[in-house]
Image (cartoon, rainbow over all chains, first blue to last red):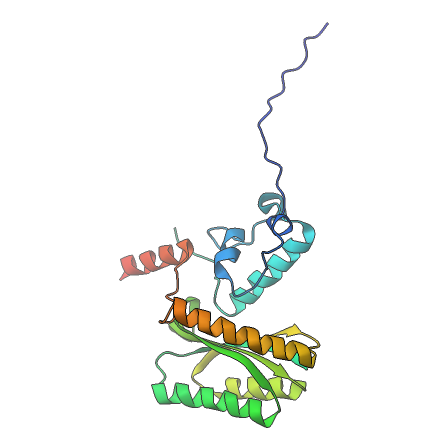
Length: 81
Length: 144
């Protein structure tokens, strides 16, 4: 009999969309502080598997980030170290 | 009525009187097209995330308004486009249909909003540089 395989089990927190969890939060392209949570240091939009957003809110976030970029509240890309 | 908001960035090198004239102009357009301003905010001087026409700083204005016809937006954008002092602008439609009751509510809310803001921060808010921006500024400083 084979001993039961020891599987590495790293604890993973189940990610819940922050906007679903807290309905008071609104996605606004003018709110740079919130949007900054959803971009990388280089200014890229964080993927859903990292941010944990639901599809609907990820879509809204993406739209908001793109608007904010347009009006120079966010950078399109951050170059340099 | 439709509700729009327009952000425009004014070149900070523009003389004060020209900046005021531009604001006047916005008001006069609103008046001539039967638009109604809910609020007009001056965010003050902010650092831009990227240079626009060699300028790395800009003075932001936000106009939240109601318009009967898209002609108002067209005229407003045309004016902003023709004005050399305006670096960039963005218009977003926030609501497709606003009833007259909602207009009253909005106006009341805007009033309250204004008073709170005046109490909390008498000076225009200082832009908080994001980590990315701070890094960028550092890098720029080193280069110089």
